[in-house]
Length: 161
Image (cartoon, rainbow, N blue to C red; front, side, top):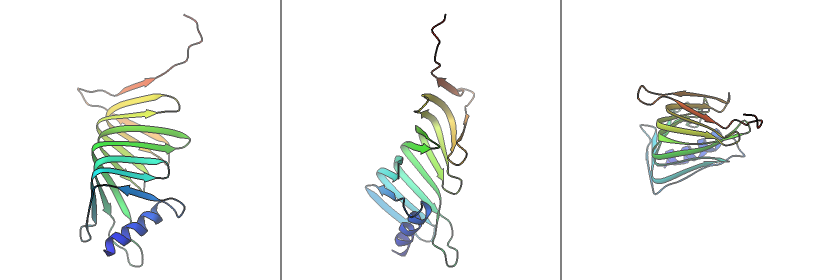
């Protein structure tokens, strides 16, 4: 029970006082000793405008430091994983077999048959590994030998042929 209260306090501190982290799921388990919390069954995470949905969400906590609350070090979403991120004036939607979020770096990694679309400029990325950093606004994509990276962008034409 202490861990659950610590997780709720930490989540609030992680995302600033005015932001809330809300997780809805069918099941919840926590292991204080391992520092692992698991949500399963139609998991929906919401933080301000950002969303992360999956069948399973694991939250790994940093070891407790004296006088401090435990903080999440990593979120791993698997099974029908998809996301919506609002950052640097842009909106990204994406999906993959696995999505990893590292709060300290504000970095998302989409793994396995990854897809990412930047809504504002209608750009699409396909790859086996897609990395999005909210701090820098950068994205990196890796493909495989059988599935190269694909980038699709709409280019405006001036009407000339």
